[in-house]
Image 1 (cartoon, each protein chain N blue to C red):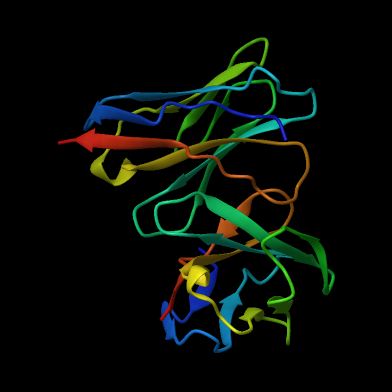
Image 2 (spheres, each protein chain N blue to C red):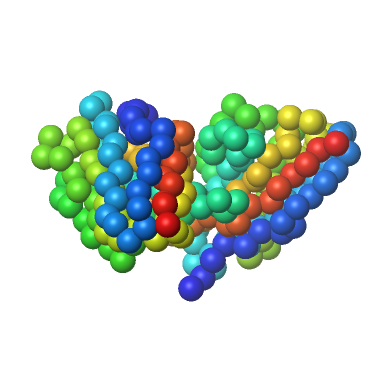
Length: 111
Length: 109
């Protein structure tokens, strides 16, 4: 069964550094998403992406964040100048139409 | 987005049916009722969705009240692997999912 994959599974970085989280969506899907979940809290929407552009973003997704689909298979989330409060699980999701399929997540730890 | 109300937690015995309730009294006519779940240390996982009629799939059944102001997710025979947080979500468009706190389901062996 096709699935969304994410790398790395765990990323540790120093405050102020840039990180890139990578996702490989399901191959025939057209809609891509990033969510995050701070430990013990709700899953929060960050951004949706369709047809090579952002279709919607939340208040969390400020200028520190960017997304890109650099080739036909990868979907990336870049976080510039990381802050302590960026520590969270980051989930990528993709969908063909309605049902979203989530990846296993990347745990980002900012020290 | 219309709001849903779910119990914070529930317990059930292994191999017994589980009924997870959800209230959504402000649901609009175009809102679909979706259920996702999140197993420990994993990403959310789609379970089932419906509009007006009851729905069945290999994972669960969804029973929707006639007035659509409430629904119930039914796991017919719970296993330890079904221990998770279950989210009841209303969606009127195929876009972002707004997650609430969900119901944490504990399965007792």
